[in-house]
Length: 287
Image (cartoon, rainbow, N blue to C red; front, side, top):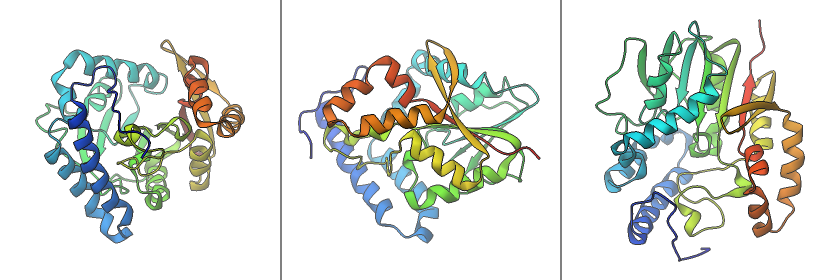
């Protein structure tokens, strides 16, 4: 355990005691997932997340909907990136959709939008348009026809998937993408973590971030599934640029060989942070 001194981030409304209680519950449930067999996890993902939200009623994912202005700003920020990929004739899929607010906004910019998640609790009581559909997943399956999606997107999802399931989940994403389709993936960088509630206590993620990745590792995983190529999409002040994965690989190589404190300090600089926290865009080969 790294520290017992809890310094909540800006906007955190919970006390240190409540955060520690959240940590203990999440670590307990995450350990169940880590120890589970593949056959168990089809149901276990939904069970542990539903149990987490029941036992931690002040979890940020549940309380965030009570601050509409904050939620709207988050959605706007994400749409600045997605606007570079969406078009009215395209079909959109969000994996790990959570409260579905982003998917609902995407309905205004796409022909049809699907929201996929392992739990319905966060998205309960939403009002949806005709070109929206919510899909339940067991953590890896995507119940859609092959080649039916043009743009797939996930934000802070990959780190929640059991490492043994990651390849299968990406295979399913690959299969539902149309030729030439893209999967835009954003996940916290392992070199600057941990990024779940265990960040206050541990050197490596021990909560529901079952595995945190570098961009280099994530790009390699996408290529191993069959994606034709990958690139990074880095943003700064609402503007985005395509960046070669090789550039970030070199940067991550240097960061990984620094002392932890120096690595985190350097990675916090805006120019470095914008690169190591880039979206990874995986492109499926055109027919």
